[in-house]
Image 1 (tube, one colour):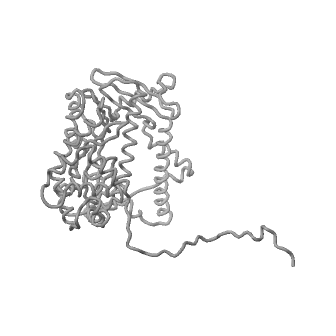
Image 2 (cartoon, helix red, strand yellow):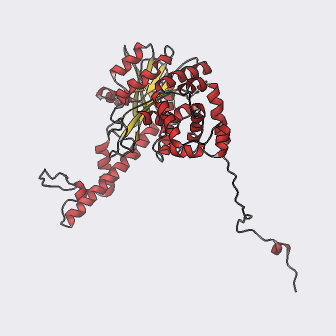
Image 3 (cartoon, one colour):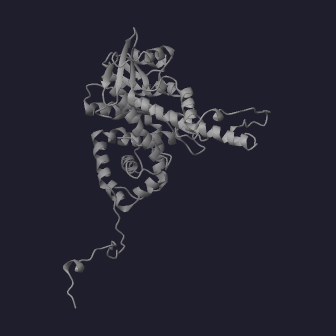
Length: 425
């Protein structure tokens, strides 16, 4: 009998096995977020700002600290927050006795009723804590779908959630520009209010804490003469995207790499500055942005080509126009005469034809306008930080859709401000 080699005696584990687990009554919760909330609650003096609004019954400060810790963690509904708060370990940490979830809803309602005063006092606390040399801010607006019948602010409007059939709220947020990135204001308005009008509410909330010559950065959706004038009357400056017109198109048509300043070699961004008595326009052309626009145009052209193919297939088969291309109104009698151009060109030629028709000449181009003179390379990062912040807030909004009541941002204050406002309006 031959001896086995050492290699033959080595066995490999192909399945992961664990010892039998014995269930018990022990439960745990993440203590890091809880301690962080407790720490910032004390630093910002929220015991004085929030605690004084309720003197009897369950301690309001303990409920708020618990809700903030929960919303920065699991971030589900107020009801689920109440269940979490009523677990023995959490009750012991916050020195609470077991309570009904309705007490939590009443606390949320109370905070909503006092939200403007709380926000103003919190703004002062943040400024005292940070000793800011400047108060440049980034402002943006978004929407949140609302499911329910009680809220008067829930209206049909332009939906950034791509759910036009649902009522919604519009949210405005202002935060200090980097490196702080601290939200200092949030407004909740009707779902049919546009950004231009909502700007005034959000700006009014934060204008008193802005130091002179602060830079207010926002998107072109809120760019109108009245809003720009309001900023300048407060001795502040603005930086925003410009709504392009034919004069701007002429500037972009004159683009020449040798004549425009190169401000970002990696993305191929060139800039040209035009000064006016009341403002300064910063024109930009980006090679990377143009590639993105071209890719988007091609995807749109492919959809148009597919539609034409579907219509041509109906023609070849002697069938009527597909329903999705017809006018759907029982009060209107319509007859259709149609033909496609697919017989005259191949598929690639058809795509080029459609893309040429869709091009506006603005691919890769954008313009910023400001009341402050600065190098183009400085104006560009200021706008990019707004874009990055908007992307993060969009992800936060998507994460909060599971409970339809949250809007997570960086600080405990803003994590709950939205649903406090909406539930109390």
